[in-house]
Length: 338
Image (cartoon, rainbow, N blue to C red; front, side):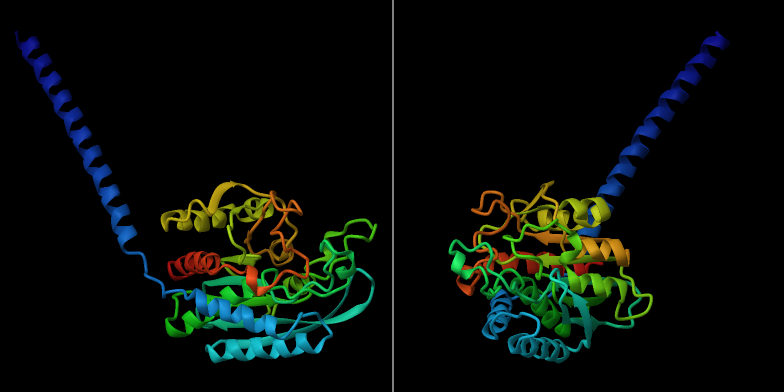
């Protein structure tokens, strides 16, 4: 009888322990869920991105004419970009450099660097290229193949979004430091008609130079985000190969942020193409984990990018304000919640 009572007490004790453990787990689970909800509620509300302003900044760049190194249009636009960034309170440096293009000709370039909240230790790097293609080598009309392009989307759109972000940061300073780098001589690769061996280092000359000669000795950033061709209609961004390989955690951050904001249909969580863009050299030489937000369209007539890519039709009429708005909103949310 005593043995039976002892066994019953053990059973009751075990049952009580199990119930207590289950209850504790449930309470722990509820607590974690509450903490996640609390964290979501505590997201910093970023300033409101203005796509009309970004559109104007693209329009202004295009008004100078093609921004091809060695031209008056290029020099005039460089001055305007530097002045505009200074107007928004940035510490601005124009990094003059000399490099050789694919044809072995030495050319002068200008990388434009703007630093916001310079005393912040944690920094985020935002990038775009501001030069334009000297050849419309994908134009349907072969007579246009040696004509420089306006580059409203290819060049202008990324810069326009970053200038609007700079304007917003002048109104509300983020917790992190932000460095905007506008690369030159990104798009002076060989014309498509030239039958030469492909060399990835024919492209992204400004980013190659900056990555090996940063504006500040020992410069680094928590991560980098490159914008390229973000202004076309019906944009779709996928996880670019080098971005995923070198900085998949940043792709996750940006794509998850976009999804939370209702843009899952535009920031599509599936593999994209492999692009040797400016971020490739920032990863390779500067060792800053960087990603490329780039519109790839395998259904376009060139089977790679938007229809007007590297043609004389890369003009303002094909810039979509909604695309600019989406990219700007997502970037601001990422920056202000770092």
